[in-house]
Image 1 (tube, helix red, strand yellow):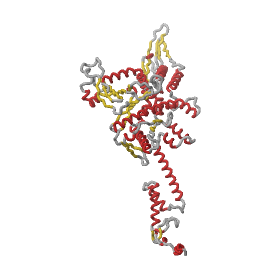
Image 2 (cartoon, one colour):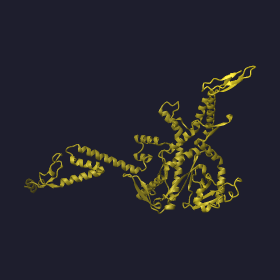
Image 3 (tube, one colour):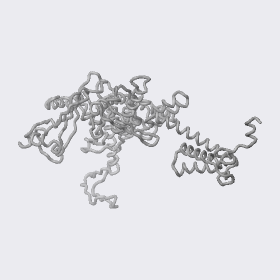
Image 4 (cartoon, one colour):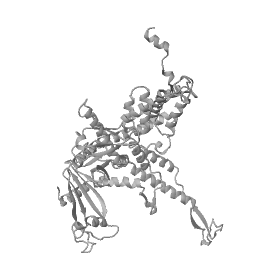
Length: 584
């Protein structure tokens, strides 16, 4: 384990090295949050921007398309042909999907997609959750992430990583009062005081360090007393592998987000729009000057007020108005800047519910949108495939290290609406080898469903492969069983309907009424209701009753169709039949 001083020194070095990159991230964050103020130096004033924020539009649209579909893990059997291996592989897949659901992975993927596009990086840390007894995914802000450098740029698991966040003095005293009470340098404590926490993780340990207030001459002697950093917790890492995964966007030699290039254009467009509005405002309320006549001393006798209908009176001079023209090319410049922003950030007009003026057909619009969006979505989803693969391996290591022999259960859908399945981590996690893949990287959920239907229609894909690719189907095998059950049920219902309309058929009015009563009132499944109706008819037909009694009458049914009970005399063979049997 590292000492407190080593962790703090490592943090300061990485913070200094990441300074320019984090400054660019903050500029993107301020623009996305709408915290941009346009300085108008010529007028000695500042103004809030009042133009469309294309960065937010493009960021939301692209990230939602990336996260509109979820990848699926696939665990191949460790031994081909073995039913036990197939069963364990199926359980591993369901268990991993259950862990994803427990962590609300769909919502986390939306946030991570925004981090990847805006900051060019997204980080996550996995740790054991002893409340749910499951590995827990914690999405970290890239602005607060300081990972160790890696030799391979495609390596997503750094040897160690430092995550930072802020906490209050009350939280520290409530949870670590014995450690920080009289040792940490708190400085000037008030309701706004925040202290930096360093969470260091590597293959050996997880350590938590708190930084005290900065040593400033403005603090009193009593406020400057204390340690600058204290180790709060040091927990061994049982997995023996790093717990952080950092996914970076593919660039040339340094991190660069998709929208880094639009910041300057946005500032220029916002500043030009603000100046145009100021010129328009001055044109509505023009500046007036009192001009003296030759040889006269001008004097204003009465100020004019157009709103109140008061006429101004001037003596010895003339009033002239200064009209301002915003410029005949201002609108052209604004449109050109907006177009440049859209080209730089890959933000087509369709993202805002509009269509370009040169688009004439729906097919052409789809082609333009596809060329702008699809490949960027495909690359981001491919990055998440590799990232989730590494994260799953860490999650499997956490399960084996902390709950290896603990029986666990997870819930799965079933025909009755829900079910559960149990497993022991050390038994099913024979290996962590698996795949994580999107069904069609680069396609959002709408395009994916249409593509699956087209491939099924022309016979290029099997229904089983389509079920595995559909993001709405979590268990393809269960869906296959449901389809077969529904098909057989439909065939059974069609058979009953055809036999019921036939007067000579087996379903007589009383039997059909009994069947309907079981299904409608008794809430019995169709196949169970048919079985009970058949048993009831067999018992009635096997029962012996005296001839002429109501039980032997056909009732509403046609005679001889078995609607009545059997007759005792009808069951005795005749004399002729006995003689025929004897050969007489």
